[in-house]
Length: 96
Image (cartoon, rainbow, N blue to C red; front, side):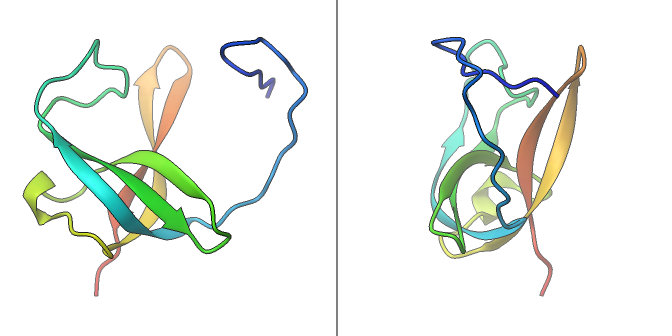
């Protein structure tokens, strides 16, 4: 896979392995989408998910109603195929 930085087109990147689980640190419910960039139809929860390595990722939370998302909720990484050979990462709630 060829990666590049979106705004400067640099290919000077390195692969870093991160956890596939995290906790919702902050979130909002998206009621109106802007050009549907993530392949989801509003309303949906958009969150910052804190990983054990100290990194935070911005992601949609799927697999539950937006109003069920809570700060501190455990989530697990998954991928959503949005077509045209593109996927976005999403988090789903971890049961129990």
